[in-house]
Amino acid sequence: MELRQLRYFVAVADTLNFSRASESLYVSQSALSKQIADLEQELGVVLFQRDKRTVELSSAGRLLLGEAKAILLRSEKLLPILQEKQKQVQQERNIYIGVETRAEQSPQIHHLLAESVYQQRKKVPGLQAVFWCREYLELKKALLDDELDLGIFFSTEPEAGNGLESHVLYEDEMVLVYRGEQLCEQGEEKIRAFLAKRGVVLIEKEFRGMSQIMHILDELGSAPQIRFCGNGTAMKLTVESGESSAIIPKSIVQSFSNTKLHILHFQKEAAKIYLLAVWKKSRDNPLARQLVYDTAVK
Image 1 (cartoon, helix red, strand yellow):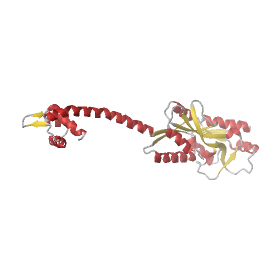
Image 2 (tube, helix red, strand yellow; image 1 turned 135 degrees about the horizontal axis):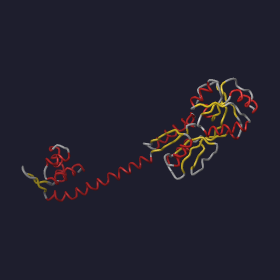
Image 3 (cartoon, one colour; image 1 turned 180 degrees about the horizontal axis):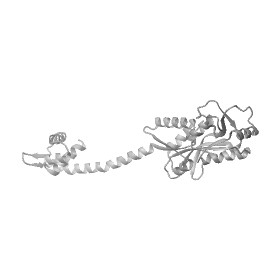
Image 4 (cartoon, helix red, strand yellow; image 1 turned 30 degrees about the vertical axis):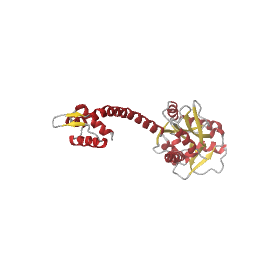
């Protein structure tokens, strides 16, 4: 016995007219009659007394009518419950990940995240990861507003603070990258002389990176000429063409296509930088937590 058969039976019982019932159900009268006949055969009773002019419920039909309506009502109530449960299950399989614009330039980030999500998808069928890239302040606000499960960004400190939990994915350093004759010595005097000659290119509106770079230059005692560009691509081209140098995380140097580039290490505390995975303390997503520990460089 199927719910469809009960629905057809109730439609005929309420109208006592096969033609009107078939119209209300948007099925042919012959298909409706067959379903009723199949139901009668399955139950072993006659549900309707019929002649050429009238249709009447039999005693068995009257008994079934109340039960059939109750069953159909329960099924209608069950559907939204099941749909809500399915929605909840799907939500538990979604993870929203934000990557800071500066950090997304790192090939290592791409590899680590993609591989970790891929491995998680094997364990959690139907897992859907939604990625988006934003500047740091927008990313942090989205975490605090519960719009993101996980944020990936660079920080000069190993902890995020302000209601956020964090895990260090890997430690990095800010380095000077340039194209040209490789310096044999990397002492502070040599670096200051190089910067005075070549200058530094910075990305506009990347205030956190800019702040750390200025701190490094202050400790170094250097005040080079500074040129600004609009984005990471423009910065790469400026450096790869040999026009200027840049101070960026060492991991991002891997995204530069030119193999003739060189790097200089500042060997200063101010040059330390950490790639953090960050999530809101009160937003506990087990998938995010597992992804963090899978992503961390061992």
